[in-house]
Image (cartoon, rainbow, N blue to C red; front, side):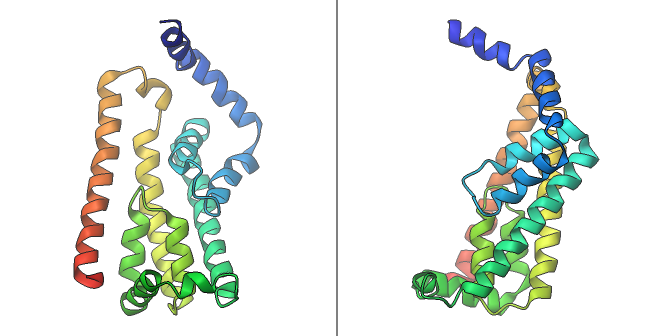
Length: 201
């Protein structure tokens, strides 16, 4: 069971505190850059970046850094998709029947579907941003949905994941964290199914 002892040693309060101190030493640019880059590379662990930021810079500071980075990164993806969406490189996306249906759905309803999709904790926001950029939705409604959706999503993750160093060593708080993430996921899936039945069936 040596691996278990190594795992527990890694997640000890002292070790996690040291890791957070090292993380802070990289500076705000590093803390901002990770959530920003995730908007372009969705396979990166966005939730982990937010949790680390709020534990390194405090609830308000970590939330603000993560929120600004995620919002600016997402808007960057939207702008790039809008600018280059009609090129031959992306034509296979715009001509895909399923993508076309989603684009038409966003064009019809504007704010609501983008907001709901971006609030969902496990929705690949980069895909939403790309499809929104390829659609004919105006910039202002997209920005409103993006800012409000990211505000709620990032704050929820920040609040749930704050003080992770202590939570991971307290079974009750750890259980609340896991249950909260599951509930957010379940709500997101329900909303996704409801929207699919209503508009894309």
